[in-house]
Length: 198
Image (cartoon, rainbow, N blue to C red; front, side, top):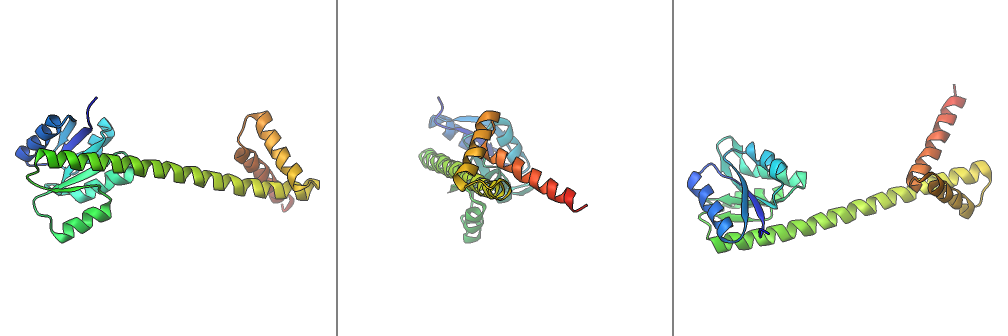
């Protein structure tokens, strides 16, 4: 098992080679290389690495913008390489959401430490993103079920517990989620209301 899998995007061939050698020396694996900003997302989508190492200055565009696209895709961590850690570069890198910024030339041990931190942080962020999505779905389900319960109580004169049990039983009997059952009830009510106004 590799320590991490990496893609490297840098138009400066000696720098790209040095990063690749450092990754390999520190127990990682380079899956692919590129020399243009437009290569970055394509390499990440093709190889699915743990981390993309991207130079800030690239001939066809800004490496920070390329990094921003990778960050937005939630596919892997991004570490930027630069010759000059100017405040504006640091600020734009932070705003893009990259998880590391290194100044060339990078000692292998420093690169390895940065990749370790970036990959670990990315995994934490992914876990938080998954938790957030699960909570969002739970909240959406709760809202849908509440609306559907209200509809059943109004139309059938059911108590709140009975309305809930009806939705729950329908979900079990039809092997659907309660959210799907609630959506169906609400859609049916909407179409009935629309038909009555014609």
